[in-house]
Length: 253
Image (cartoon, rainbow, N blue to C red; front, side):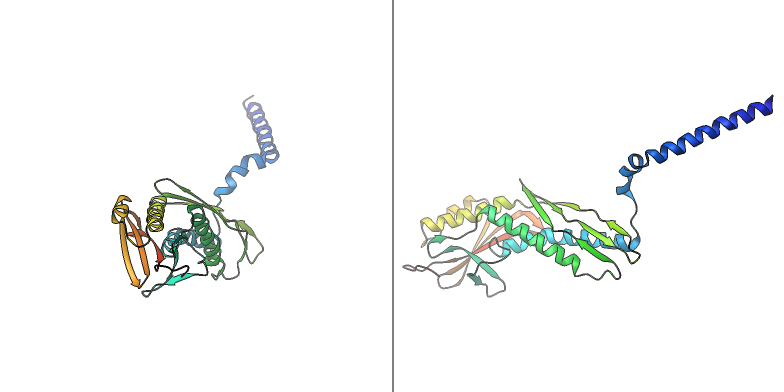
């Protein structure tokens, strides 16, 4: 009787095991699909993922510094002032006219920087026998008291054995830079110049609540620098600068 009971138990367990295997096979996609994103990448593919992350991490703050240094532009307009100490900066005020780009244009210039520089950073690296298939990068920037940057950049890695791996395609980064406040301060200065181009209204500049430097570089040419000591990038305050040209009776620079 004891042997018969054991045999019956083994039969039942065998049937249960078969049923479980059959259920796993039938519902394998539903069970394992949610786990696919957590699979460990091969070392060589993980190196590509790390490289993409590094390119994003470097470009997000650097792009903001470039935009600030060039008067709100990534791609400078045809007319700009070449600063003796280095670099070219766009005019925010030119011969009595406001030429500072709008805030919306400045943000688009920043996005353009990201969509150009990040893929270039990734695609020019040597990953040996790996092949990269990339799609267009898109970026979105949200601002309040700081910047929240979302980057969408799909990259697929093909190995020498023709295995395919889709990398993480979304990246985000927060920067403690009150970009809108700095831009608004620059615009306030430009508007004051439009009203009275022959005199600097220091009360207006002080009213922005930010540090403002006025640097005459040659007759009729001035570089205005707006700095926010509370907005830091790599341990330095974020700076926005623009060029100004005005000569009494002039029409254009």
